[in-house]
Image 1 (cartoon, rainbow, N blue to C red):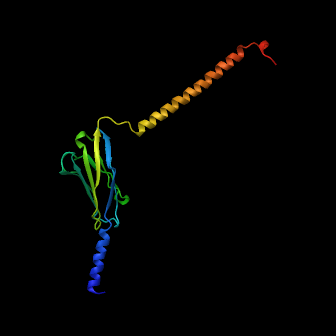
Image 2: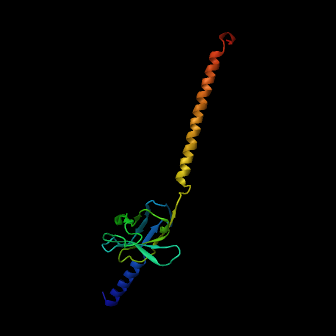
Image 3: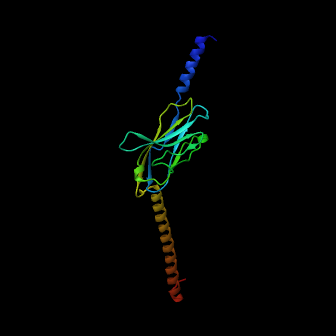
Length: 188
């Protein structure tokens, strides 16, 4: 092969690799109850096989500010958060072999409201969008699907209990009336 041909193949190879950027997936919005632990879920897919140089970085951006704050970093092993608000509260909860780069944030407070950015790099697959999660910490839980399900089950159970009670009472009064009816009044 000639040198220009080899160069063209190398350029084509680079274009092919960069044509498939890292894909990062997150839930866009997340609501958590004040004082609870929350899992910031971040999954990814890479066209390149996972290598030792894969890195995961999590950053935080406050609602009113553009500057970001480091939350967590992973390169071959989880590194504890830097001193600050996330120190001893952010923990690795992912599994890179399964495409999971999630972290756990303990004891969330209202000051944790904001956007969490998840970035995964797996050289040469280093391009692509960061995943974003808008976290809202609330003092009371909203009326969620679980509450609706519990309400439906409760209403259904109450209906069944009332139905069984009505059948039992109906049979009781029918049997009572049959016993009190004199035999002479019955026609054959």
